[in-house]
Each structure stands twice: as structure tokens, then as C-alpha cells.
Length: 110
Image (cartoon, rainbow, N blue to C red; front, side, top):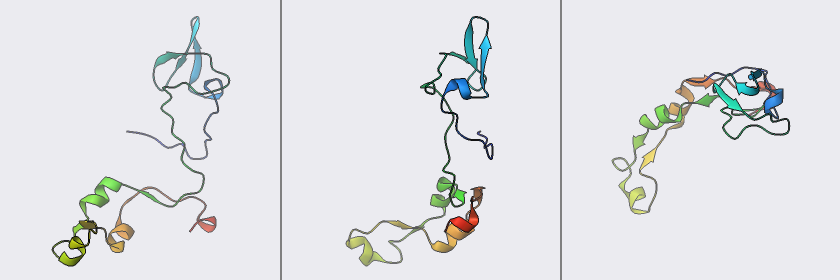
């Protein structure tokens, strides 16, 4: 499971991260519970933090949506013969998909 901390910006290096702390004669990361290098110019290669764009629409569960996709072959066999995709996701399914993370900057996006 993961968490999103709204309003928090991605640290540029371990030394600027709130999870970074001095432990004995070394440094540790509270997220990974591992010893890390004293990095003041970049993030550790094993850093689990992932940046989400500051402007985005609703983020949905792709796997859940794909399970709802419909097999197109039974409705349009001619499209299958033309090499079109075997599955199609209807716009109604996309619109009804549960939101995982709500959109940001509603007035500036979409």
C-alpha cells in the first residue's frame, strides 16, 4: 500500500527529505528502514518516492477498468479481420471508474 501526501514536493536529495536522519555513525531512511549514503545532490537509487505531476486529471485503477473492457469480436467481427484491438473500453466505463487520486487544479486542467 502507498500514501500520497498532498502539497508535499519531491525532495531533490536525501538530505532534504523528512525521512532522512542520522543514526549512530551513519544515515538512515525511515521509509525503507535502511542505511543510506549522505546524499546532498541526488536521491538514493533505491528511493521509493514517486512524483505525481502537479496538474493531472483523476487517476484511476487501470487493472480494474481493463477487467470491465468488452470483447469487440462478438459485436464487430469485421473490425477483428482488419486488425483492430480485440477489446474496447466504453467511455461510460471510463467515466464510472472509481477515482484513486482526485484531479488537481480543476480550473487549469481539462
